[in-house]
Image 1: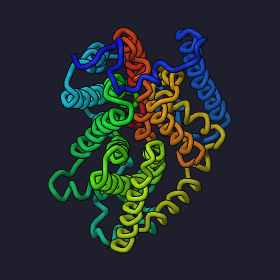
Image 2: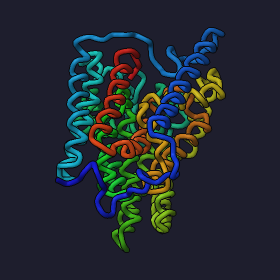
Image 3: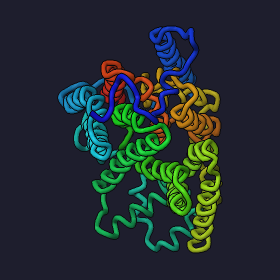
Length: 449
């Protein structure tokens, strides 16, 4: 047996699971309070949003705080997701403590893909690809033509592109263009890319968690990462962004635990991946907070300096070589956003509603797990990710649609689930809550993704 539910092996991070006040209230009281706050947040966000809609304020969301239409549609198409949920809930906590680490990572990939695909199949096989055809990046691939002209004029012609292309740097369009040039064009390959990216993000977060908190904690976190309710929104470019950004963070985390040249090499890789992340989504630069916190905690700030130099170098080289200035693109996107849909979405409402939507996609169990965060490496990692979410929220650059936009933040926050998995039965119980919530979300809300 590789692990056990009763105790943690030497070197594992047990402080986050066991530390706390000597006379702490019972778990069921704390959990009940957290669930009550979770429900209250959703009710307030929903009622407030409905009130704004009744006042004819154009939020451009139909089921506040979520983007999508309320459309209850249980049926045979939901059966694969139900079966998948049952299998994963029962098997993952058991397997996570018994399989070899490398084998377990493979199981995580298969389980994550199965869960995301079966949730999409609630709306039929077309739901795996059709959302990627609606105002997303694939539409812009045919408009690339001359790459030099496309990149050099991207900022000036930003109003000519569809919504998703306007809201991001040209990185995703270029990725799809390259795929098309090598014979992997079309919506099916686009779908394969984004689903693979989401699964890659799970593996990256597990590797980083193992490095920071020990293998035992990573094993306990695995079932919660695989069964994330956020998988209902995977038919967009954001799961791919999650994969690239997660490996950027993981490379830097690993660099902080390695000596000499190996550390520098990993820092360079992390910097290159962070540069790629920056050219995929402007807002994901906030994720630099996570490796920065880890590096400072481990007193390995050299890693941050090396990575920052690489990122700046790449941005300047792209500017000099193609004419696309990242900072000009960000300015143009902000202008388009705040003169468009953002001007009709009240800042104060979405300051709350964004957090409510994010709470839905991380699931109630994760919110309960937050109450167990104490001093320790899991608390450090999850706490840094929560700071990223709060920074993104107050920035005002994501009013609504965060169930999709904030997908790259989700797996880092869901590491907290490890603190719930103290026993097999406890893990199964909380995973069941997560799975049921995801299934209800899939069959009740018809979203654009």
